[in-house]
Image (cartoon, rainbow, N blue to C red; front, side, top):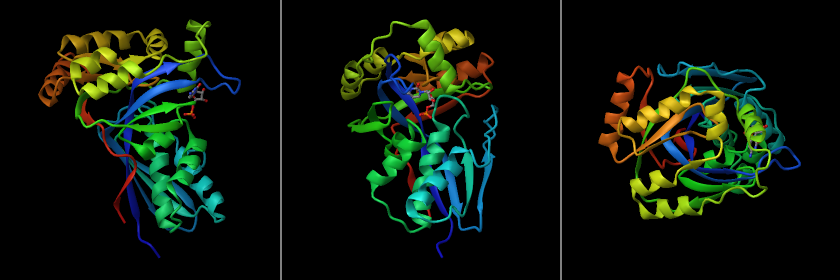
Length: 302
Ligand code: C5P
């Protein structure tokens, strides 16, 4: 029998998040550019007689707790893959968490992607990548991106992912919030603020041109998030945080996905450390520095 398998999966940010009017199924059409960050969760799976989930969180995680149990997205990933393989979902799943919870960085999606890849190996299924991507899309709109990683354009409801060439290393400061924001509530607030939103989301072309330039100043100008206005309206302190980070030397701050985590693009690693120190000095307890792009869910042991 195979021993424990550990897969590492990245946090994501949206460099561009264009949101259109809701579709008939209630989801919003997106044109987004994701970037995977070095900030990541590890999921370890081992053989067991039943499906169990456990979690250990890094010291910097001072936010909402992760609901464990059968409706946890990792348990759902195990159940879905087991059904696809015609077997029982027997495995012990352990999450080592570094990605902020309910933060707009797709931490749950990263865990689901990691669980799919790890269980595919533990159970010696060896499914083709296209099959894992289909299962990922059933679990959530941004789970496929967590498998792919790097920098990628996402369309549909975010699940249709095409990699983008991105040879640069971009420096980021990440400021999580101690209180989560639910993604559906931010989308609902988007609908309330923008009842006449066009069906077609704002296109990602300017952002893609900025990525191709490799120039952080150009990327800073091109960052775009249609969910920022509703997130800041629900949490006005996020607007103050963004202004403060920019005053501390960041090229540009923005809400990550549906928030409340805010991310700051900096000119290089030194500027990111200086901005992070400034934000800590201003009383922000947890301020992380990281880089992107990073690989998608990949095996690190087993
Ligand atoms: O797909 P996922 O489970 O991550 O989506 C969570 C919720 O976010 C959805 O139920 C929906 O309310 C909202 N959402 C949306 N449009 C998208 C993605 C998510 O309205 N493209």
